[in-house]
Each structure stands twice: as structure tokens, then as C-alpha cells.
Image (tube, rainbow, N blue to C red; front, top):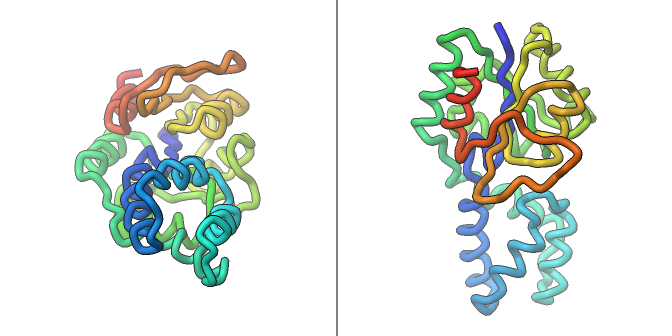
Length: 214
């Protein structure tokens, strides 16, 4: 049974639009001009910027008296209540399992935040397990995190595929581990000459279909 190693944010779950919605509400609350949305999205860096750095940038820009720790909490939890699992994505994962693949989430981030998304959305019903970087002390693109995922479910890493939207974290990590991969382009063009995805897809359903067809 081969492993299907899947990223979480902007792969199985739509973080981009949820964060944008939260950011719009937050900026209204602090009385920021509408144009500041682009600034906040840039500071967030598609979720790659450390939450404490984002919180400090917000406090400085708007001279807020709120503590950084409280802002970090809001950044962690602001989108959680609205996070949903697309039923079609759930269906694709179920089909993958039925034809002999073992879906496992491998993601960077904080355990509280990422595990909260997995459990709250019901994603845990469609995957065999998950590995979160904070928990294991290793982050993508370090290939060891994929080996740890294989150990977690007691399966060999050989034959696994990696699916994700991160050029460096997911596709670079897959290349370092010697694994084939599917990149979710999200409207972007691949421009890294060091490595390349095996396939490119426009969403998680198409990505899973590409792996099953391969």
C-alpha cells in the first residue's frame, strides 16, 4: 500500500481565501484603510511568516495596545471556525484509500493550529494519520519529515508520492527524498531550475487523480 503524502494549507484546505476574509474583518475592526489588505497579505507571506513577526508588524503599524501573545492567538484561531473540508476533496481521499493508497498529511506549523484544522473539519476521517513539524522537530523541505510520516503509519517510504502547493517545502522536499510529486500551481508558473514536480495540477482533486492514474 503506497503512501500519499499530502500538504494541508492550500492543498487539502483553502487557507488563502480564509485568511483573506479574516484579514478584511480584522482591518475593519482596527479602522485600517482598505488598501492595507495588500500590506497584511504581504506580511503574512502566504502563511510562511512566523506568527509572532506578523503580530509585531500589526501592533507597530496600528499602534495597538493589545499584547503580541493575544494577536498571535487571534492569528492562530481567526480562521479556524470558518475552515471547511470540501466534500469533493473528502471523496477523492476516500477513493484513494479504496484503491490501495494510504493518505497521510505532512505539514509545517504549530500542532495546536494544524491539528485543530484536521480534527475540526473532519479531515481525520479520511486520512491514516498526520505529521506536524512542531511535533517532530523537523520541517519540510527536510526529507526526514517524510520518513517520519512513513514510520508513523509503519509503511515503507518507497513508492510514496508527495502532493502540495509549496515549491520549496513540498516539491523541493520530495526531490530531496527521491519521491515523485504533484504541485498545486494556484495560478503560478514553475520557475525553479533546481528541481521540478512530476506533475502540475490546479487543485487537490486533480492532483489525487494524477497520482492514481500514474
